Image (cartoon, rainbow, N blue to C red; front, side, top):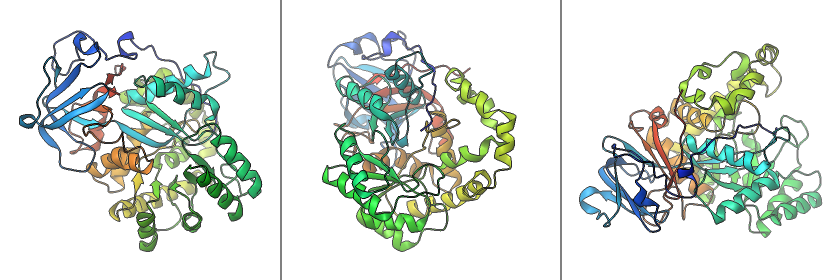
Length: 448
């Protein structure tokens, strides 16, 4: 993974390890100071709740959270608000579970004087500000990400939750693959990530006996395996070998019904990462989103990479890149990816939301998650289907659905309040008013 440079944010003290207790009685304002005491409840009243299960939204709902968990949720008449709870009026607004990115990346730059952990935390706060409350970093994220993950386990709530596969595993022999799996397993990673290409775009590939050894060794250590792939034939071979997650789109031909059925029967996850392919060719010109206020609210974090992708020489190379799996070919591949995403979702396959953001320049952590949702809509998915893949669907694929992904009693109080209804237009997920992780309101940046 290309190491990335991300600016640190100034986060108000009220957002760190407590409820954000900003003063004010305006409807939808932050919870009051009374919510800072241990065991205090917060009740969101009058809004619409989309719980992430795919069920119809609950109108005029009440959602109660306490001690970092959802205490109760349902129609107002059916939910008793605890005595002393802080009430937050969200009338006319919508509450959804926090978004889960099942394929992302975090990293640090040696050129940045800030410690690596601080750089990674800044990225997790950036994700959170855009409503991504959980990030699953798949590959090349290193021991520093593992340290941040471990620290979060002791004190959740400050920035997006992090899970990580640690460094990606590739090898040229079965024994080398097994040794590398053992090394990352000893770091207590959440998953193993491998790829068929030994390097991005390389013609050198791992032979079947090597990725089979990686998969078998990971399973022997109780770890699931996510695989970077491109072609349907490869995907079928990986499924046969026991891979647990296909970490990118199939981009050469339409998936067939037998393959869809096999993913469903074996409960093998699929992550489309459409914006990964968009990023390969979109910088042949200056992209329109460079003028989007929703993007520019984090220009301090994005500025360096904006400068790099705006280089006229890079634009010219991208425009003329006709190499196999290069920019112009990937334009067509993205269309194929869209078709396959629609086929898989409609066929009931386990699909998780993911973007591959942070893996290289021009893959914007936070903003591209919303771009991904817009691309999913262009592929023909309904807003509800998109929200399910980004909440309960992602949680199920990543095996964290026992605590995340839906707004149900006992689950983590990771939620978003948006001012417009995302079921009428998924772009309304951009109207974020507040973000809560483990019951703690996150500090959010104002749009310029």
